[in-house]
Image 1 (cartoon, rainbow, N blue to C red):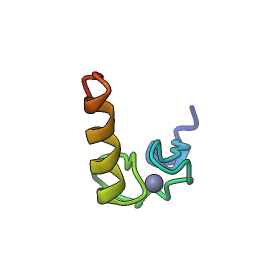
Image 2: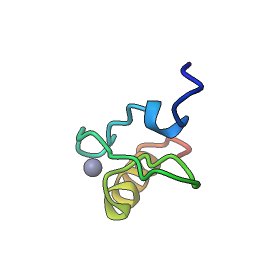
Image 3: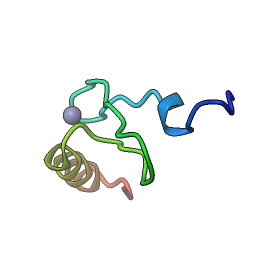
Image 4: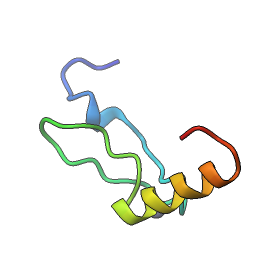
Amino acid sequence: MDYTKTFKSQCNVTCPHCNAPVPQTPGAGRVRLYCTPSAGKAHRRRMRALGFDV
Ligand SMILES: [Zn+2]
């Protein structure tokens, strides 16, 4: 953990929907998990359909 950088810039997030690296917006806010909101929606819906609690 490098405390001279923001926490979010150290998160290497790949989109679980299309496996693309997700660029993090600097500043306050949550860590982005999906490349687009629609990709997140589609992924969560698919996981729920498979029985996962996402
Ligand atoms: Zn994606």
